[in-house]
Image (cartoon, rainbow, N blue to C red; front, side, top):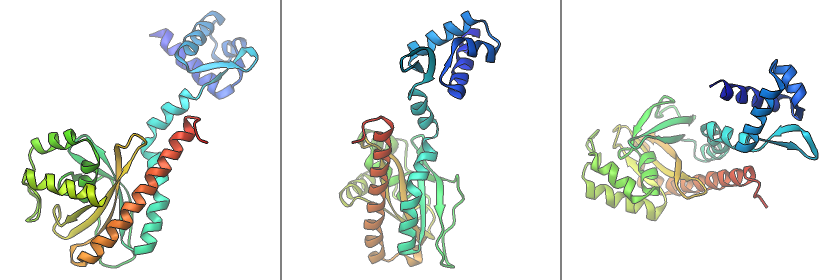
Length: 257
């Protein structure tokens, strides 16, 4: 255990003072040089540090720390990337825009909300859980993911929330097929009867869904014409976010052209 703690302390100190050598590390950490050297060898073997150019006695951290940090803050990076596109969509249509992420296999979590200026609006608190099969956000993600994941979800049962909730497995399968064809999912008061929405999945470079963006409004305001036109707009916004996330990933990997 002590060797692990020593390695972590050395890594933090290298990151804070790079490039740095063994003697300076030993003084700063008040550790024997031999202990520092062993920690450096361990960190180098694991790919966390490297020698600073031709200075074989001085060390810097590698980009591995960056990649781990990006994964740890993935939700924050997603939000930062998505918000400008969400804002552009809100300015265009002046309706509430949501960003949700899947949590586990049975719910979506609202992580960002941009409000409409209209006095009659929907409201959901950040952090609220949404059911997958009864929300546009959830159906968008379910349709964009592997079919086996959708089948596992269906096998768990489809609870009813309102009179329009899809609780029949075959009907949900048909709805997911339609979602894939048009590129966006719809919700006509299926979770809360007073809330309707259209949503599209945001995908990572591997094509798997990592989030969804939705346009949300009172059911009384969602006409068939608006459902179709807003569906196309939210589909385009989600694609833009997906493309932007892919560009960030490629740049972080050092493969951007």
